[in-house]
Image 1 (spheres, rainbow, N blue to C red):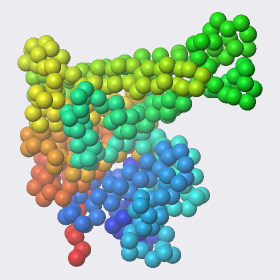
Image 2: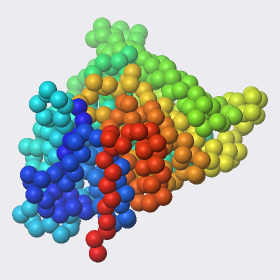
Image 3: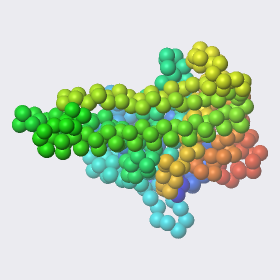
Image 4: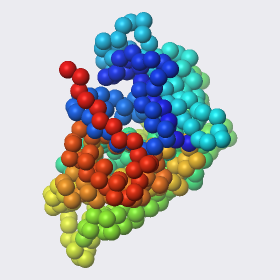
Length: 398
């Protein structure tokens, strides 16, 4: 299915709209938008993101806070009257199939409905949202001692991938949250009202009840080992594809490695002793020489770091093994991401989007740069794909 209509009412930039008239009538096409700063183009990005991301929230308050006008996290248009409810609605359509609507406002019923909607969650896992801030997060790793990308993967990637060999129904992010709570606590043998973590010290206890609890610790250990092993396999696959993109698309003469150090535990009765894993970026090959780059974060220039970050992100975007390829909506929404790139990398990424990713995603590209807008238009025209695109210009309202 494809996004045909996007309704935005009293959300961020846009005030009250006619409920029967969509802000954007896309008709399933790809979308290229030019808009000056202050014209509201980023509201389109954040409305689609908020709509899909709400399906991943674990509590209603994590969604309702966006509809709290004037609140710290509120996204309601500041000029909207109190009695005008903010909402977002996406209408998906495919020939021969009834329309599907994803709808969200600040009411408890709609929040609970979208949090329980597996189709919205799958669409969120199958879609991707990239702006310059996402790329900046990858660039910032070069300032850390070990170039540890774990926090970036935890926030940006793990909630949206499902590795069947780890868990066939829960995302990698959900499995990680469960692992970090530790094995289910059991009753202490000598203190009836006390709950403790089952742990290795129970293995040779004289009481059968205690050795049975030890098996719960063993089960947790196996789950953690599986998590570490399968995640390493996933990262190896992403690294292999990222190196292909670096060499073939960005014409770089080095290879990267995502070196995985497993998460660790040291379980006692009262403490899990959890240590997060490390995903360290290394450069094992540079100019056909091995292990000559000891500190990549001080050795590589900005252009090379940009190509690394993009190659990793693009490798993840291409991976449909661990994301729901049959989701109702597969959108790639990009808001001024390419403006943070030098001109050579900007041209490379735009070609990749228009030649490869347009086949798997409904592309929505937003920019405040007139030159980029015209560059993208020219490339679309050159590919004879004008009929597949809707191109809009948004003006700032004084």
